[in-house]
Image 1 (cartoon, rainbow, N blue to C red):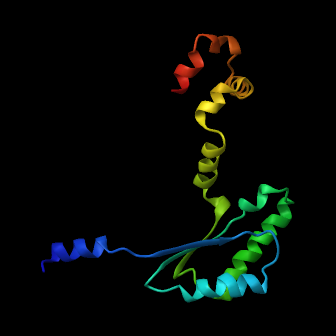
Image 2: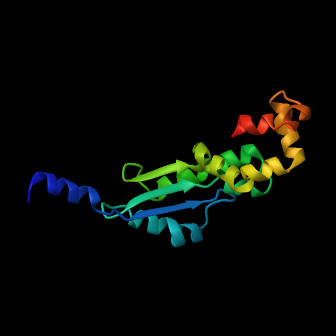
Image 3: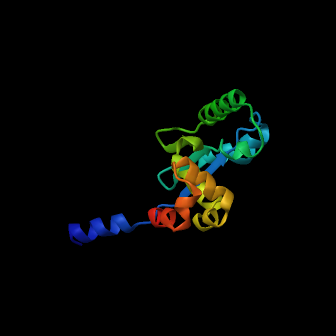
Length: 146
């Protein structure tokens, strides 16, 4: 087998991935450890690409004290590492530090078309851009956005 064919075969090989996260809405429990984290540690190998995160954005579906949430986020991250998640073998990250996650969520919850069908949202956008509703009457705003 030539080097070029061998390289192509190596690049096309599928590496299974494990992705999971824990919400920092309370302290870690024995259930977190036995049900998830212990398995995460066992799956750290060359066989899997393991990606684990602290899903702090999921915790803000209800009001959270920002200081408490920050502390709980640190505690979950520390719990991952203390339980044996090795940052050299796995990707470990904080969900809120990946801006694309929140940006994707905005697109899902407020689709582009619905913003322009809602006069309240449109007025807010126009005001924030320093334009009046009158300027929108001729479609100016729509032409600028599209």
